[in-house]
Image (cartoon, rainbow, N blue to C red; front, side, top):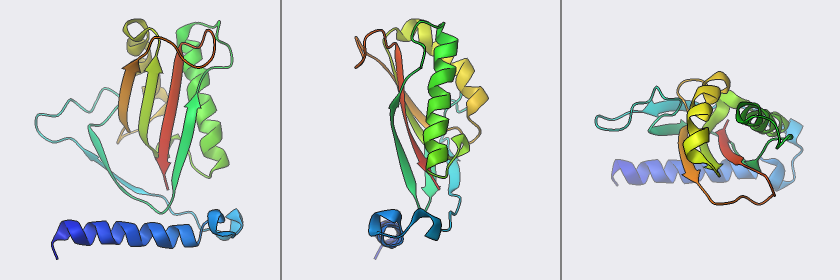
Length: 160
């Protein structure tokens, strides 16, 4: 068996074992012993620079994944920098409820109604909330989001 097959088998086995001991299996959350994930940034030659607040790829060894639904700002009339901070703080609250922090984020997907205006601001703000290795990230320009006046929405995946 080649190393890719062994890695897949180990990942699937670990996932199944993790699910068996998770709250999804009927055990209380307090019965779990959180173990921080091992994150390795991947920046192969020819890939975009990793110092812009994201990393081209993240290799993760983890026991638990948290998926944060798209979050937006509380005050949709605030300036965009404030809206981005509010959005990232909302993500932090969801992560905290799951036993994680912003340092555990491995992937971000960001949606912008005005990507040309807002992406440069977001690139600045995200570095205040995220740390190296920065999460893998995608920014998408869209024509509208689910709520009136919503200009930014961010979803996240964290690994523990």
